Length: 432
Image (cartoon, rainbow, N blue to C red; front, side):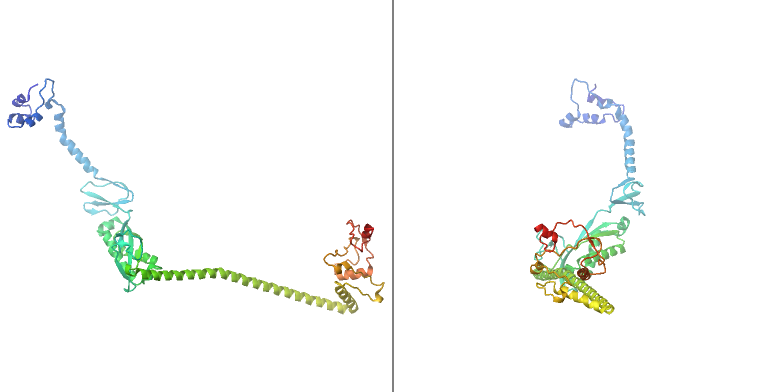
């Protein structure tokens, strides 16, 4: 193997073979460290020179085509664009924006610099806050500042002050309009919202903004802000407007707190009165309905009774007109029966002896609670001619007194005799 010096003295086959070694070997002023680095260590082992590597000439011939091909592939790769979910792509071709955005997915366009694609996040929420900067981290009380950088706002015709923090959330809805007409979306939304909020709160009193007009104010602010953004073709969509915090200035916070406490007490009393009314009103209505129903029932009862009495009187009049003597006799017996119902003494005229059987149950008159029932009616196989359904109890009793049950055949009575029945012959036999 020739040494490095001999290689330098020998004319190489190619002008570039080991030319660095020749120049280094001929320079006698090189440092020892550099020569030691470039010069291979002297050894008896066989060595391999770089000139003997076969692929170096081939690599030198192909290096430029490989670099050119790689650059061409990279240039062509700039034609493919992936649009992720929740985003849209804005294609610019020869300096002009495309008429429609690119939907999520893989798209092929002209390579750079003839075309470019800007990916816009259309589903990502952005936010700006009016009236405050950051949270102070302190408890939220009217006697303390809630947020850093709070701003007092004139409300109620410019005669009252309120501190209002309004977070506004929006997103990009139309990427083409957004790219053409909007440079700073946060500043645009903040400035427009501040103007609209000032116009809306000026016509409302402070207490109304803090209580009942809170939600309507947020809805009006969102609607007017969206209308202004659409008029400017900003491509932005308002998602949510919140009135996060509304409170009076810190200096007058305790006074406002007293007023709010008094109003809360008033509302409490009002709700308590409504509760009592809701409890008492149904009761009163139910009682009124009950009295009305009772009055209607009493009216119907009395009307029916009066009608029945009138019909009875008419029937009695008809009976009297038909046979006055019989009517008087029947009425006299009815009065006798009614008068002797609770009698304890019976006095009969001598003229009625043997003509009218009369009995008096002393047990019933002396002790009505322990008196046995009246003599049961014995069932008959052949009905009595007096068993007329048109006859009442008095008629049957009178006819029984007169006929003593003649013409009827009594049926067999299987009931055991009652020993306490003084008028039952079977009971007398049982006692003996």
